[in-house]
Image 1 (cartoon, rainbow, N blue to C red):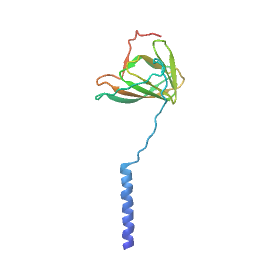
Image 2: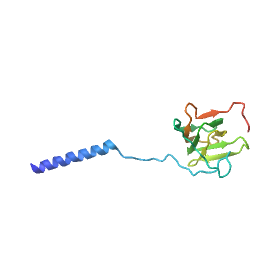
Image 3: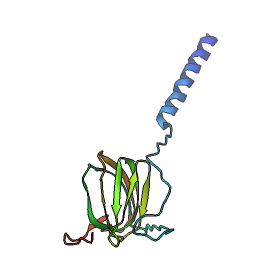
Image 4: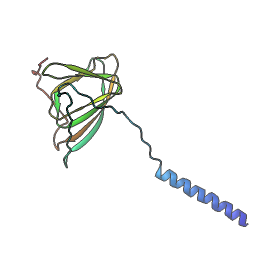
Length: 153
């Protein structure tokens, strides 16, 4: 009888411990992308990017899917952001010299608030981007398009 009680207690303890593990779960981390910061068109060589997130502002991460031949018109952002290219490629163009820079799968870039540029998928496959806006001011949209008449390049 004593042996049976020890066995039942052991099974009960195992179930309690297993239940605790299931209840708390395991922490897992899946990297969605990482990139080394590089010089980006529209900024001086060696530029240090800065981001500000004031109390009341928003940090927003979105997945953006850009089909081949599609793109964003001339625009600026109300906050700094990071862009990680998870699939395909994205070309960024700045308005002063009309210079372009293409970022491919596994790369990315940083942008500061207020810098006008446009971006497009000049490739032949879908571009998938992870964009994190850092410090969108309360009540502001993350992106602001330039007027349709804006066309420096």
